Image 1 (cartoon, rainbow, N blue to C red):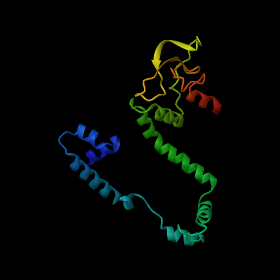
Image 2: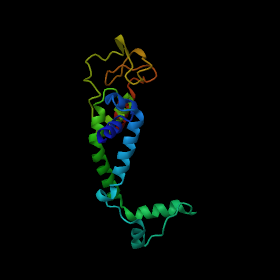
Image 3: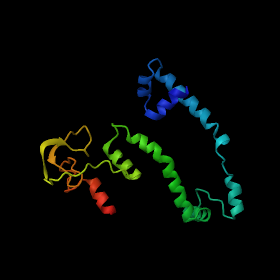
Length: 189
């Protein structure tokens, strides 16, 4: 049951899970995923220490924040300002990024991942293997038409143009002498 649930969480698709495990019906898979998810959610108190929000608010001397209050946003902002300093916020965002990086690196290994998503992940991981070593000749046109590496696969746009920096083929929609990724890299410097 756990294997079926993990396959579903990895693929996000019942049909792909069923394709991997041929002898299971879609309804059965759905029921298994629901059962395992409920059982896992029931164990959160054993593994995660949740603080009592009411006691925390009372101890800090802050007012209780209700959604319908007139000054809801103001109270909530004050509450967060009291609870966390800028350093703690930065540390928590760094910790969150460190926890997510292995998953993002694993997703990057998938060759069928959308190009836009690959570019976002590579930017977050600060990976530069998107670029090839620039060739010595900086001609503006390719000798043979190639598909644009930024367009979705379904469009299959053929082009003679290439990015000035990374030498990848780009269509006229994405052309600005450099592809959007290289322009972003140039802007960061």
